[in-house]
Length: 170
Image (cartoon, rainbow, N blue to C red; front, side, top):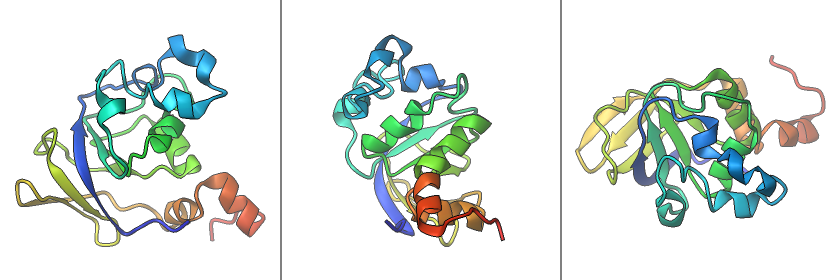
C-alpha cells in the first residue's frame, strides 16, 4: 500500500489534550479484540457523533498534545480503521505519534488554529502544504522524515519489516 501524496477530506476539529481515553474509551476495552467494532466508538468521548459521521479520507484536526495518556496502541488503530486519512495536530504526545506511524496512520504536525470543523482540506505531503479549500489558505506542515514515509508506504512497521527484513535507518 502506497501513501497518496495528496489527500482530501473534511476536517473534524478537536481541541488540546485529546487523550487516548478520549480516542479509545477505557470502558470499552473489552472490544480490543474486535477493533472494527471498537472503531465504531472512536473519539466518542470527545465528540459523540464523530464515528457515525466520519467518511473515508476525512481528517482529525486537533490542537496541542494529541494522544496524551497511556500508550494504548488501539487508539491510532481504531482511528485508521474508521477511515481517517490523517490526524493533523499542532503537536502529538510522543508515544501516540510513534504508534500512529508504526501502524500506518499518517500523523502531521501543523498550526491548526485557522481550520474549522467542516472545512474541506487538501493535504499535499510531498510539497509540505495543507490547503484549506474552504478558506482558500495554505499552511505549512512539518515534513516527515524519509524513514517514516517508508514505514507509512509499507503500511506500518510490521509490514515494513516483513517486506524488507531487518530495519535499517540508512
